[in-house]
Image 1 (cartoon, rainbow, N blue to C red):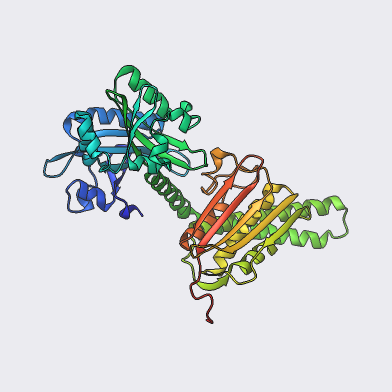
Image 2 (image 1 turned 30 degrees about the horizontal axis):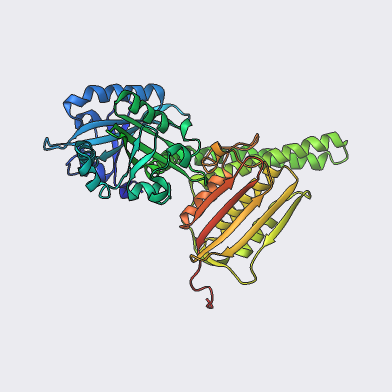
Length: 465
């Protein structure tokens, strides 16, 4: 994933010395191999006139733990320069202690050229409007859209005709509370350019991250909008993979030691239950609690190993209906939870690892049952989607997931429950990702939650085999 992105990525220590880099970063600095980059500081590849400012920015990032964009002139090995942008963030270990920096490096030559041309003359930026890959908008001092390009309309998922002549505050309710709006107001009031980046939530629930460059213009305001969602997601995935790597380094040895201790406790509990069979109920209740605690600890250890040492899937032809029913049957569903199945009559076949898929589905069902706290309805729906995808969804009637947590529920070690450490949904998401599928959650406070899994349909599902 890191080698396939269009940006350069470099990992450094707290001293700024590069420890890892992808091939794109090597190319961007005009080097022949990663070895020529390792051991050097990132400041060495920034023009001398920008180094002091970049160093101050990096110090602030280290102190605040924030993400910051550093606009600077970058250097190639042959001494040539080009405009660049570094998105820097703090890299932490498993305990949350800072151990270095993650730098996502971007060549912004084309964007800078476009921005300079747009500022030079109104006629020129009109000609270039549809050539740039970023969204472009011009607004008057009342934040009414005077000009937008096709890319901006695509980002907003609205026709240009609806945007033109409309006020931004009317088209996007609540935008006055965003960092973007405050930046636009400041540019108009001070006639000084402004930069901002943040997440924007659309009325239909879409969540995208944007970075905006705002400039004073004769009409009022010129804004260049860049969708940075994919880059942010990639960086978050990189951080998650680092956490998993750290967990994996010690999970094997620790799990072995803990399992031995738990096995001793388990056998002792069994012996005591046998020997104290005729004792009062209070003694038996305590032994039952000990047994339950041992089982919970063993499950946690196994989940840790599943998360950090998952093997490659061993594919077989499976029926989504059967694997869903098996996951529900394997879960201890309390009597107060009603389970409904909405399955088609015909098979919905996929190519998947039966053991891993069953584990993923069981974790999802377990999570839904726990969320309902003993009463409610769990609805499992299986269908063949129109785009050659097999789809299964699990809907519960629990309290739902707060909007601020919706994007984090698949992160390892993240949990909103009083008990548990957040492995179940992380494991399920990893399984689905390894099968080339998607997994998404929809919810709202008090509205329950729906988790939907989609995998490619088996194209030979109608044949024997």
